Image 1 (spheres, helix red, strand yellow):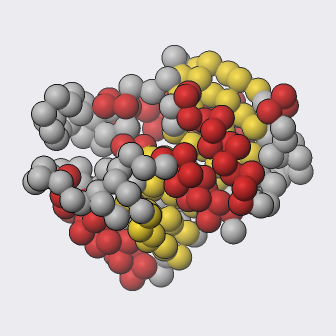
Image 2: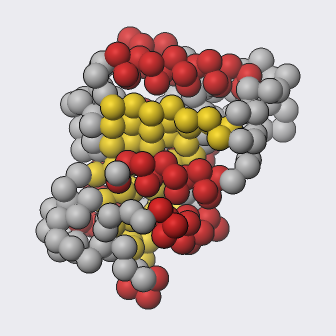
Length: 229
């Protein structure tokens, strides 16, 4: 990636898109759904991994409980908001407006596209594989794979195209909760990872120290770095 002063910023349908372009024509592109507060931290953290040159595209300004969940779901825990499944609508915006706008100004078509995200954005990254073929590498970091019905969806549906590689990770304390929904996250993530491996997809499942909120920036950078290697 180039240095920060070479980045470009766009606004499309209320989303902020920041492009950190690579220096070579045809380099890979990784799209990251993130918060505006963390995107620059993640970019800097990636510098510690000696990644090959690539373009990082961060998308913020998301309505997390609407843009990322694949379908409706009541609040998973006390004090949380319900999920109103707008993933298909947002994915249409991503693939038909954001991706073309970004890649129209890049020096050459990307070698491959990746999609990454943390928590609900990690859930969305995997769901996208079933709705579009344009992302061949995906990182679901501490993905919300406890989401009601998602495990069953994965086991009974085919991805569109055949992904090259998938990275799934969790904190090793994420399942240690009294919440009956969230406590299933490791079991379901491991089952989903095994399902992809059986399909011949290069899949890595990794446990990291801590709960869901530990080192989100470092974990996200590690997932993206693995896709690049």
